[in-house]
Length: 282
Image (cartoon, rainbow, N blue to C red; front, side, top):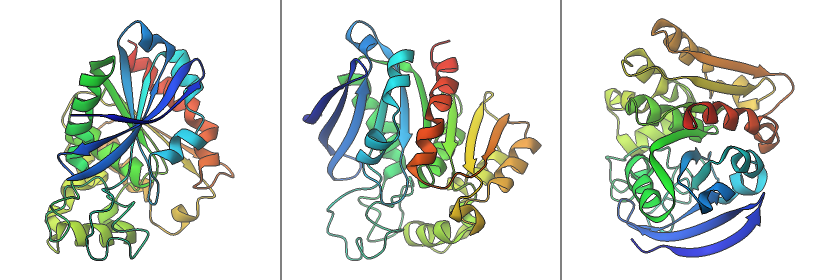
């Protein structure tokens, strides 16, 4: 698979790069960002996958989160893909901010006209890691995953649906129970159709209730002043209840005064990278 470098900037003694490629899963050109720490020049490094939220591209995280310094210190590659296919000329793909372009929800769509291109779940869990492992000094045995909001939902389902694939998982203000909130119901009915039983395989709370894989150490940060928390879009209590029932260890931190923005992510990203480094560098 041919990669085209879009940009490269030296940062924290490593390099923040962006690449473009033709995606076989999504049938369109896709961009992803990759941070290569200085350690990557001489040896293979573990990989931390970051999934962004609604309306984001690969740019938001790399320009706003300030993750490069901690990634440089811990010798971790960070990969941040886009959040949906782009420019597929599907009718209605640009009509709303929470469905279609910039809102892939990390599912494999089963409904027309979305099912050909909207396969973000397979892209993130299969195609992208293959691409990273074959083109960069990545250790294929050591990967972890994190994300924000819609991407926090994505990170949690990827870890819960693939026991043992990711060494650790974390999330910022994740959509924890999408089948019970307006964002999730809109996206899932559009991508997956009216049969709600098919939605359950992409809902972290439902997946946690039946998880039986190796121990997964979950870190979640949530801003107490997050407008989407008070609007019942995120529903972290439902996930925490499911995890405690299955004895899945969750550290859930409600952060006083923080909202849903990248200022919140910037404030705690170092803790998350340290959380992942504990397992990735073990």
